[in-house]
Image 1 (cartoon, one colour):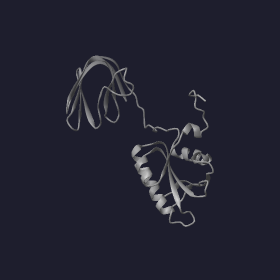
Image 2: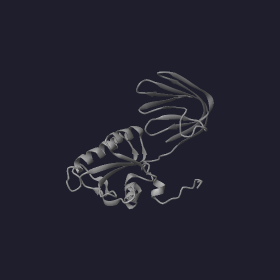
Image 3: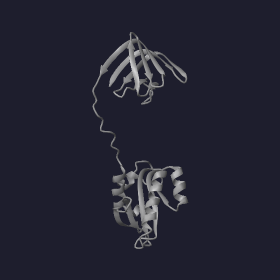
Image 4: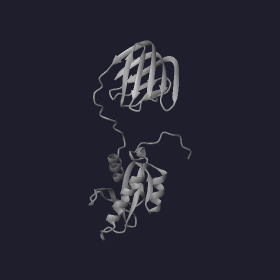
Length: 219
């Protein structure tokens, strides 16, 4: 990654035009070929950028970045204050706290989160089309299949629907109803789940981990 801090002006010419007047800015040139222009007051969002694939041509006092569509980002350098390059290597990617596997483990240990009287049958219950995240029984002894997501979207509801169709063919389990559980459930997914008779449960990850909410409460 190359980091350049320079007093510069920037012009974009493409489907529309844009101009950034002269000011000190950070220019990031990444190994993937992308170039982005940053100010010191916009958090992560660049003022302007050119996504890869693109080419960078450096002339005296002018950088020209051109993408495959022929759009141009023209950076006029007035004064270069810093110019350095750093080899970052391959990034391992973001490892998030609360991944689905951990949510599954926590919910299985606290299956009563779904309702009083719930009992666990098994995590990763095998089927011919893949394992069901959690299979359990409710207080009335009915079988419940739980599909877990960090973010609940339509494809998760579709996945649970396929599991339910298969599980309900087993006379030892049927009738099996579904619960779609996630930290966040998209409105479209909730509508589809409700239409198919699937219950939706929003999970509080910190509560499952036993972490108290530090917000003030009125009792």
